[in-house]
Image 1 (cartoon, rainbow, N blue to C red):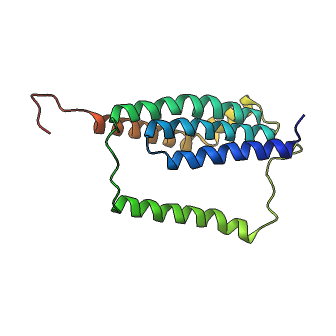
Image 2 (image 1 turned 90 degrees about the vertical axis):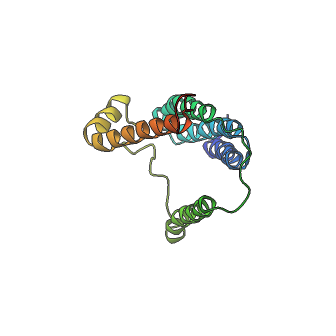
Length: 172
């Protein structure tokens, strides 16, 4: 059987290959399918860390429900038009956000090389049951949970509004 370290490395490579392909694929449906591979790699990472519940949630919620929503929006928006190749404000802002995100990730890692995984087999996080997670989620983190739910609803309504084609008798 594989050691934990080997399994962690294999799932890390799966997640990284999927993530690279998400951002390099030109067709949005292909990118979304590579995102499923990334989600499955992350679920495997959760399993190697002893967080089976989070791994199962990753597969059910993200690789299942969220991907259906992504594919629905992609198909609803009809993104078959070729992307603009020029440098636009959106591309520049995206590049700036990517560099800032990488800096925010790299700075703490450079300052504290002794960081270890938070969930060890002895920690209470690794032994959390679904009931304990639900109790904390719906009591202590109820407001952030509802805010995220509201943001997802707003994003979905906005995507449907953007994709809505005007009727023949209606002007935009």
